[in-house]
Amino acid sequence: MRVALYPGSFDPVTNGHLNIVERGVAAFDRVIVGVAHNVRKQPLFTPEERVDMLRQAIGDEPRVEVVAFRGLLIDYAVKRQATVILRGLRAVSDFEYEFQMAHMNRRLAPEVDTVFMMTGEEHFYVSSNLVREVARFGGDVSAFVPSHVKTMLQGKFKS
Ligand code: ADP
Image 1 (cartoon, helix red, strand yellow):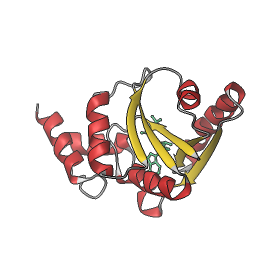
Image 2 (tube, helix red, strand yellow; image 1 turned 90 degrees about the vertical axis):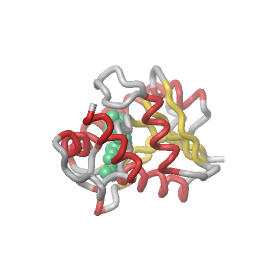
Image 3 (cartoon, rainbow, N blue to C red; image 1 turned 60 degrees about the horizontal axis):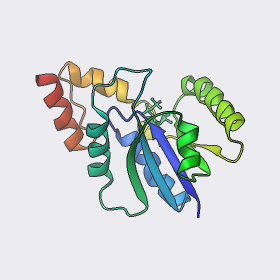
C-alpha cells in the first residue's frame, strides 16, 4: 500500500493543487492531503476552512483524506505511514526551497521519499498568493479556483 502525503498551506486550494491531487490518486494507493497550520505564514483562512474547501473540491473520493496537522511535516508523514511526500513544482523559483526541504526531510527520515509532480501547463502561474491578491482587489478568480472557493474569498474580503 503506497500512501502519499501531499502537504501544503492550501490558503486557499487552487485548481493547480487539485491537479496534483488527481494525479497523486492515479500514482498512489492513497493520498493524504495535509493542511499545515503554518507558523511561517499568516493565513487568510483558518485550518478548518481550508480543510472544508478542499473536501468540497475533492468530493467523494475514498482514496483521498483531507486533514489538518501541526508540528513537523516529516513526523506526521512517519506517523501516518506515508512513504512518499508529494509536492508540486511550478517554476524554477519553487526549486530551491523544495530542494532544501526534500534533503532535510531525507536526513530526518530516509525511509520517506519526496516525489515532485510538474504542474499542468494551464496551472503553472496559479498560486494561492496570487489568487488572494486578485480576489482582494475584486478581480475574477473563477479560472483558478472552484466556485465555492471563489465565494469564500468574496466573503472574506467583503467583511
Ligand atoms: P506551501 O506553503 O507548503 O508551499 P502551498 O499550498 O502553496 O503550500 O503549496 C502546496 C504544494 O502544492 C507545493 O508543493 C506547491 O509547489 C504545490 N502547488 C501550488 N500551486 C500549484 C500549481 N499551480 N500547480 C502545481 N503545484 C502547485
